Amino acid sequence: MLDEVIALDRKYYMNTFGDRLPVCFTDGSGMKLIADNGKEYYDYLGGIAVNALGHGHPRFIGALKNQLDKIIHTSSLYYIENQAKLAKKLVESTCADKVFFANSGAEANEGAFKLAKIYFYKKGIEKNEIITLDKSFHGRTLATVAATGQEKYQKPYKPLTPGFIQVEPNNYEAMEAAVTDKTAAIMIELIQGESGVHPMDEEYVQKLRRLCDEKGILLIFDEVQTGIGRTGHLFAHQMYGVYPDIFTAAKALGGGIPIGAVCATAEVASAFEPGDHGTTFGGNPFATAAGLAVLNILEDENLIENANKMGTFFKEKLLKLQSKHSDKITEIRSAGLLIGIELKTEIAKAVFNKLFNDGFLTSLCGGNTIRIAPPLIINKLDIELFVSELDTVLKEI
Image 1 (tube, helix red, strand yellow):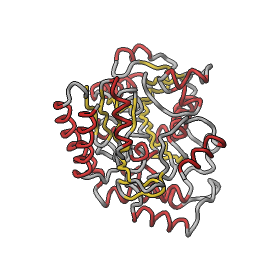
Image 2 (image 1 turned 90 degrees about the vertical axis):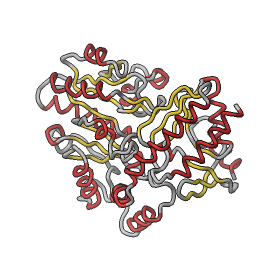
Image 3 (image 1 turned 180 degrees about the vertical axis):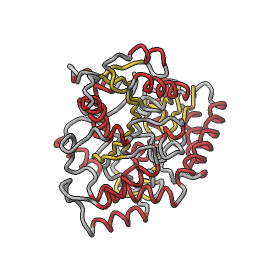
Image 4 (image 1 turned 60 degrees about the horizontal axis):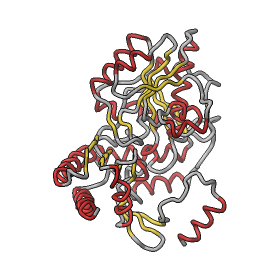
């Protein structure tokens, strides 16, 4: 089957991903995925921080089947019960007062840009620039590519959407110097995942909040990857104790069903009036049923607390492994169950490939960092299994 799928992919699918890892999954349960040839893989990547509940969670699947039996889509012309209930749940759990649902993280970030710009437009204030960070990743659309601080993503699409400026992360002086009277917002990832799991310093984030307050600038957090329990908090900004004017979510919010969210304070959200923004699919009955199920299961099964505890346990085990392989592991960076294992660059690709061949799914970020973002159902045995495997691989490399 795999060879047939690869042949079809090469013939009919646009070559945006090149040669993928040679596996095609057909089933999954909990922490495991099963390939077409029956081989089992342990999923320590969780669909890139999407499958917070693991694979085949019975309650989640039940909620999806129940909604399929009722209605899938109606459109934004009509009121949607699940949409309203999911918005309520997010508002009651965060600093947000209002929510808008989109279809992806990139689309949610686009919505955040639009909201920030129209907020000042409606006030008659000419503020239309947004400052982001070097090494950031905000999406693949033209605007989110312009916001992303990585040349490799921007170069083919120049000239870029204007109005985006990048500065060095964790450098407050650089940020302060970049602010002008045209600055509408500062947008950051609290932990830069795609570049190798690099957290922002708490003092830096606090200073950004004060800077925004002093200059009348909006603070936006891209929580597409760090949201929905990933860091041991529902959203990472709760861990920092710093509250944004706008934040975005996606990935784990739908547990594998596409959904994104723009969350904002009442003051900022009031800038959106009928006709200013919209969507056909966003927040439809099926997607928001998935979101409700994810949040309810996280709460009922204490999975955010588990992410916090298991994240601490995972880091402790990895730090011990680092002391054992100090010539190969250069740094461990983490927050909850978002973990970066930085390796010597010359061995990183080989380690990643060996893990995959042995049935352990991770990702390689920044050229030298193994990223771990497992389902939040992970337990100590799963963690010990991975650390033991990594130990074995490092001995062989």
